[in-house]
Length: 125
Image (tube, rainbow, N blue to C red; front, side, top):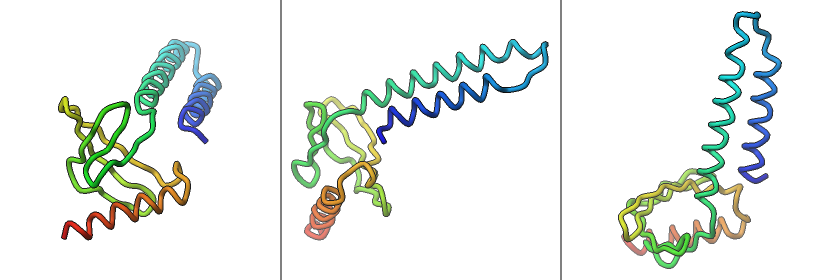
């Protein structure tokens, strides 16, 4: 499932929970505030997700290409069993961090990424 779909479902469940929350007559004022906070946070997260769209391509051991810009890794890749943290810096000095997740990639793509990254690490030693 895509991240935006999961975000939308989470927001719907949260809004329903707030709507069904039993409150006394004096506390009813809190519901509109909670609704507004949930909608605002959902909008903010959706905006962040939209900024992170696009194909990520590896050009060499340290060079990556994303959103029509060239990026270089700033630290060694941090590998977990199902994810890798990629910290990159573009030519303008902007740093971004990506968690590349195994479940968002085809199995062959994940294996190829791991193989080429570990192969490059072996060559560097």
